[in-house]
Amino acid sequence: MAVLWTASDPGRASAIATRLVEERRIACVNVLPGATSIFRWDGAVREESETLLLSKATQGNVDRVLERISELHSYDVPEILALPAVAGSERYLTWVADEVTPSE
Image 1 (cartoon, rainbow, N blue to C red):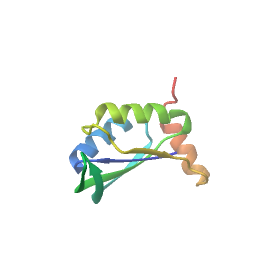
Image 2 (image 1 turned 180 degrees about the horizontal axis):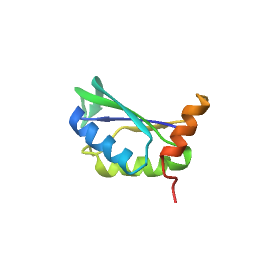
Image 3 (image 1 turned 120 degrees about the horizontal axis):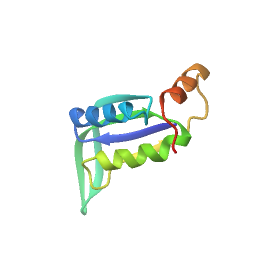
Image 4 (image 1 turned 120 degrees about the vertical axis):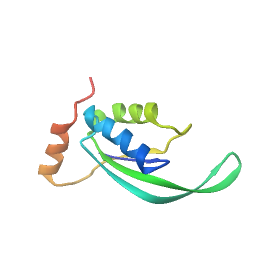
């Protein structure tokens, strides 16, 4: 399972990502600063710099991941999308499963 989300800056992104890994909600996250987001908010089109994050979790853990990102995030409506991994390296997917604590 890939969980994509954005944060306002690399420092905030890293802080949330580190917390999620420490809590064993995600196995790994790629922090990609320098994304430009164009969106409508409060009736106006806006363009802002953001940090994009690509997290790896399991299907059984995804609800815990989405909930925790929402709790820690600074945005009123954070962008968080969970996308299924339809295929992947078996060894990598096993590692991901071993690194996260399943939902209880």
